[in-house]
Image (cartoon, rainbow, N blue to C red):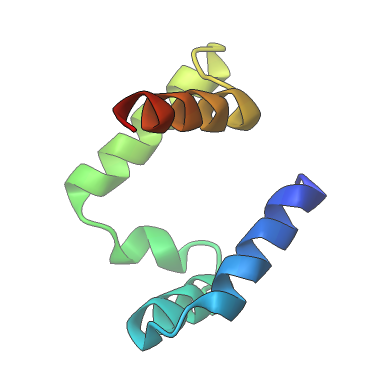
Length: 78
């Protein structure tokens, strides 16, 4: 995993006062690998499976490129 992403996430976590968000993050980090899947709805599981299949076929945008596009769109909206 990209170290910059980790530091960015840590920064966001430190800055937030949203207790619900912090509890959700804690739950995600402490969950056993199969446990998260059990908590997802059928639609969420299918969406994740569809995304994995797309990634396996190379149908994805790298993280950095996605953020660049998001930033560009935000600047356009001004």
